[in-house]
Amino acid sequence: MSDDHDALKAAYGFNFPDEFFAFREFTRTSVGKRLLNALGIRLEGPFQFLDKDEAHIKNPLWASRYYDDPPEFFTVLSGMMDGLHWGYYLDDPNDTRMCVAGFYSNDAFDLSIDGDTLFEVLRNDLEYSYGSALLDIEYGNEKAENQRHCAKLDRLREHLMKHATGDRPEMGEEYTEQYKAGSHRAVVAATRESMGIVVPEALYRSIAGRDFAKHSTPQPSATLVKKCSREALELLEQGFPGAALKLGKDLWISQVGRDACFTLLERAYEALERPLLKQMLGVARDYRTFCDARRK
Image (tube, rainbow, N blue to C red; front, top):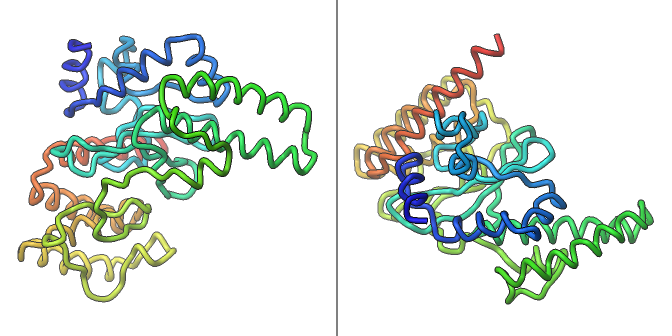
């Protein structure tokens, strides 16, 4: 495992948690394979890198990337529908604590924290699937098929709990409502994609006027972007880089504010001493440029 750990650190720039390697071993068992298949979950990114996938060996930071993945997001799993994928989310790569977030790349840009570990993500998705099937049974929708699906998940849950989440007896909606991840994150300000920013409170001050996280339109005017960006960068110079970080993240999917977004985040990552995120910002920018060129 030490060699794999070092290889991933060299490729991705951070230390993968021990649970990643335990999860990888679990997915190689017959139970793990059946569970992934039942939930329609695929192993991505670092899993493919360790399996010597050519594209991931050649460019690991690019191969499993999605267009709107923020710099903090490193894809590890994907689902079946609407570009669903999960990734380790690193607010600060200098902090070994992380969580696993997910979102649908073909739907609204809204991230959720689905676990502190990959095992918790798997359990969470199992219980969502279980709860959905129970609801369909209640409404009489494909009752026999959903009953078989629930029975299969019951068996797989039992095996999963022998590896992880064994202290969580709840099922279905009761489980998904009971357990929330990411409690270690000290969010100081909300952002449009629902993740917020994690910086020391003393390094954040809000800009005056509009809070983009509280408005539904993703396309603010160029004039407003310029005004707010100028204020955020002034606050950064005064010792409040959190202002630039927040605004940059709020503008992440804005076409009008794209250049300003990259400038804000680059300056914020520099001030916060998060060089890996600055590097990933460059990767994201290059990947978007590549995708945009292919669409023309």
